[in-house]
Image 1 (cartoon, one colour):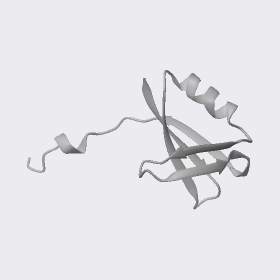
Image 2: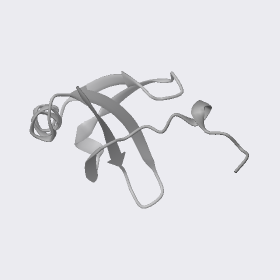
Image 3: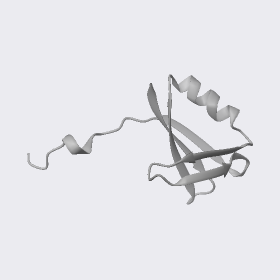
Image 4: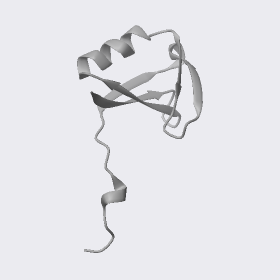
Length: 77
């Protein structure tokens, strides 16, 4: 499974971000399109629960996300 970052923009300054796990970009796009003009619920990366009416969103951006494991990086070079 791949991880995708979905960002819902309400205006230039306000947005909510969510992460989804799907097989491909096409399946991620299909999910976002199926949620159009509906209420959705999810927890963000901080564990905060959201209910969102996608009808009020101006722009939705979907991108494949590649997490960096910060615990394996050392501070000394």
